[in-house]
Length: 128
Image (cartoon, rainbow, N blue to C red; front, top):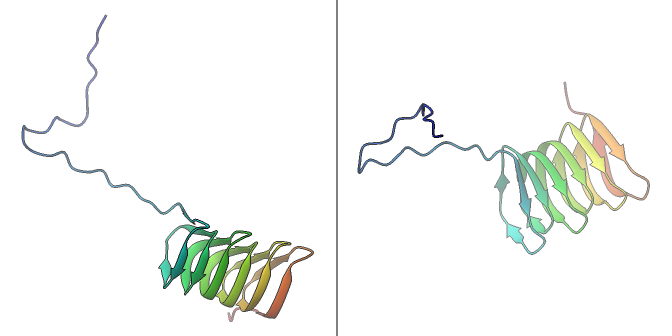
């Protein structure tokens, strides 16, 4: 009726805490619509901005949501803009959705622009 399975981690001695497990949180961070941040944001994962950011962002990926606004420099592998971006961008892949309003100089290897997007600035090819 009952069986005992082997537990690979031995029970700690009484009074000795069990070590905490390490959890990586390099997934996706969502900055809500009610947030307004002034300063620098750095992430090893992706960042989705639904609120307002005044400052620089460095991340693996950046998504600026339809109501989101970023004013500052952006460095990321991929950048997708549905909201407003004002500043300077360095990335591998840059996507402007139809609702995007961008005022920036963008250094990128790949560009996708949907019909209806607004772009004021210039696109530059990265130096090899």
